[in-house]
Length: 418
Figure 1 (tube, one colour):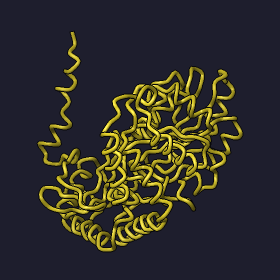
Figure 2 (cartoon, one colour):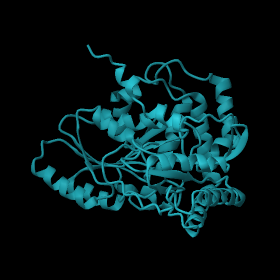
Figure 3 (cartoon, helix red, strand yellow):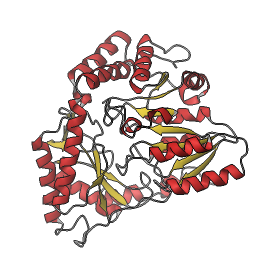
Figure 4 (cartoon, helix red, strand yellow):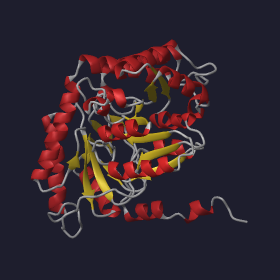
């Protein structure tokens, strides 16, 4: 009889990376020092891997609100929202989120991942969901645990999606077509083609659901994210987003029509069978909304820093890629090189993110994020660190042989991490 744990014991990737000295994950930090520095191995390093784009996790107003909520309500509520864990704080936050996003209603979840999973409660047998192959893992997981059919299209290939929708219409089973996409993709930094998707929505009577985790609070005239930035807010049916990016906290939400949110509230397992969003996270998100409204300079600064960093890297011959948000990526030739490049940058005092499968379908990239709390000195330290690593590695763009790293194309199936 097979042993369930045998596959775990035979899995060697982790052990090989440890033995080679290039394991880069779950690295502990002893202390956070503001929004842009951490204490790692006894020394302070610039945190350029965090998606705390507006620097709100270190804002004293957000921290004070979170601490006050713990004092008033404790660290947890001992139950689900449905039964005994609902607070007036939750209702206040949901009303504020609905107003901020221009939707009728919202429902909060303990994590951003669960916000994506909550979509499963909407889906039924016969429904077909068309998802970009670089959509966040929580979105495709929601479809997989539902009775619906998942069809994935090449990243950004709206033309291929249009053909798939036409084929689907010819064999329509009576279910509802759903278009599922990130607003700003977390592994590439580019925007989803929301105008093109909105046109397909209208043509095929589909619903368009957008994960705005990496763009809400950051882009658009009022910081409402990619739908506002691309002027298609009135053609997006449902929003999903996380509080662990621009809100500087933890948790997530789904926002949309009131009857849809009520249905999710009562029919989605990810909402029904989970403990409530902790009071501290709820109050922190409320305070974050206040700061976003009062200090729009934060998103301007985060985006300015991303542009300056991208330009500075390209001037040094490093092919940094990105879109209108505050994250950029540097393609690497293979996974091991990516991990070692990360460690070399850490030696130079900069903490980035080494992204390898399954977070992306194949290949490897270094992800660098900027925040509103970055000063010009922080940017100079990051650029100097990259320059030092390039010199150490022979002047290439990350390859051990000094060769340039080609731009990565992520067109095959995979799961996108946070």
